[in-house]
Image (cartoon, rainbow, N blue to C red; front, side, top):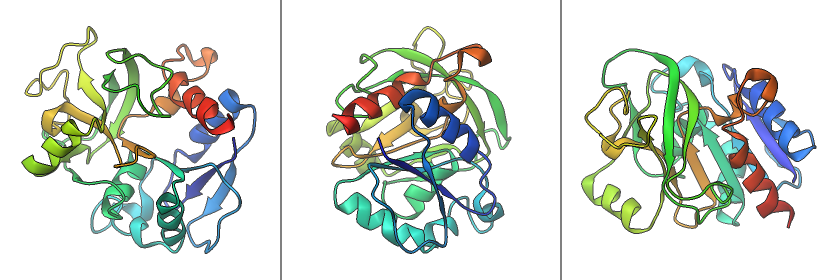
Length: 233
C-alpha cells in the first residue's frame, strides 16, 4: 500500500501516523508538505492530527486552503482513499470533502482522555477488519470535536450507512446526552463519518496511537490492516 501523510505547520501527529502505517503495512509512507502542488503515485492520503496553522480562524480552516488540498480533492474525486484524523477530519469538513462541521466541545474544555468507539458499518475499507457493533478504545485529544450537521444531513448519513463510528461507553451502550460516553457532545454521538462513495473517512479520536503492543494495546490496528487488505489486493 502506497500511503502519503500531509504535513502542515502545526501538525503534531504525523510521526504517530507514520509509525502506525509502517508497523501494519510494512512500508514507510511518504511525507507530503502542504505547499506541494503534485502528488506521487499513492493509494491512500492521510491528514493527521495537530493544530494546523495554530487553529487560527477555525480548526482546519486555513489548512483546507493549502495548495496540496487541490490535489487531495482531485485524488478523492478520482476515487482515491483519504483518511482524516482529528485536525485532519476538521480539514476535510472545511474543504467540503465531508459534510458537517466540528465545533467547540460541549464542555468548552480540551479533552485528553481515552474514549470508546462502536463500529457502525463494516462495509468500508476503513472498517472491514472489525465487525459491526465492535467496541474499541481510542485516545481523544481535541478541543473542537463536537460534530454537528443539519438534521437532514444527519438523516442522510444514517440512511446511506455513512456513520463509521459512534462514541459509546466501554460496554457499547449509546447515550448521546451522556458526557461520559459522548464526551464532546457530538450530535447522535457521531465520532467518524464517510463520503458518499465511502472512500473518504474522517474521525476525531486517534486509533494510530494504539497499534503497538509495546504501548499496551492494539485496538487501532484493524483500521490500518483493513486498508492494507483493500488497497493491496
